[in-house]
Image (cartoon, rainbow, N blue to C red):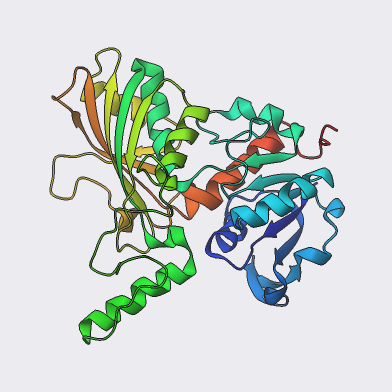
Length: 343
């Protein structure tokens, strides 16, 4: 028997990917519902060989479904997720709203699967930030082997992480550059076409951005709070696929050869690392793929026991929709879908 599943935010980039990946992974679905805000009622979204029409979330009875995948804003999720979970279904939420809630597990199945056992506290599981997901998938096996003391990360984040409007802005500005037209930014604070922007979302009091805070806090919650982590998040003119330059310091010696062997055996990781002109992965090659790709594994001679890595993944897939469906698979395997929220 399959589950009754609802996808909230089904018309967005990630919502559409969730529907696609549910099908690709053959997740057991008996009945599917696409939900969105009132303005999207009746909009068609693809499901298997046909389409389904979006329903109004405000009028939907969530007690008649077992599982809800949400890809909406943090404010929307704050308003709805707890209410939906109390109605019965397990909620897997892609926003930042619940990630640091002590009663909500933050899950990457390759990293901390056992944390899902306390999902029944609120019937909510949080999906981490897209950049955090690919980072911790690569760090977990290395941390288990040699214990990471410190990590310095610079991200190269695609515009799809900011939604469809940002993708449209990159496309529109790119065309305008070639005809010497206007490139006035709307989604981003500065022109994104043929440019990079070292600023993501909002400033925090310490001079970092909230995107950088998310990566640090979420890594600490899922992997190890003792890892010293500093991040610079940069938006780049790429449509899909996030990349990260990662510099690590370990407690014990670990060679690049050993790291390469460990990562080759790690779940969810694919190592592409040859000393050739094309012996690495770029966002273009990662697009549409499930894996987190690791390349350019090498010693960092500036610190004791140091390594440097290049980490790439499709942010709409492993960075969002795929990880959410993998959480659903994990909940299914452990018999957690259908458990009632504690009162």
